Image: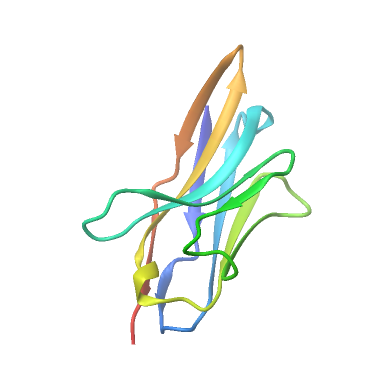
Length: 120
C-alpha cells in the first residue's frame, strides 16, 4: 500500500506560478512511476506529467515549457510539479499518482487532490 498526500494548491493570477508537492508513504520501494493528473470543471481527468525511475519524463502538450515535474533530491518520496505561466484553463483539481510493481502486479494509487484556481 502507498499513501499520497498533495499540497501547494491555491488561487493564483494568470501568469503566476505555483508548486505542488506530493509526499508518498508506505511501500515506496515498490514505486516505479509517479505522475500528476488534473480534472477541470466538466472535464475528464487528464495526464499532466509523469516520471519513471529511468527517469523518463512525459508532459501533456498543453503544459510543455510551462510545467516541470521533479523528485526531491534528498528524498525520493516527494515529487513536485512546478507550474509557471499559469492560464485560466489550468484551473482544475490536481491529483498525484503513483504506480507500484510487486509480485508481478502493477497497482495505481491516487492522492486526494488539491485545487488550483487561475483567475484574476
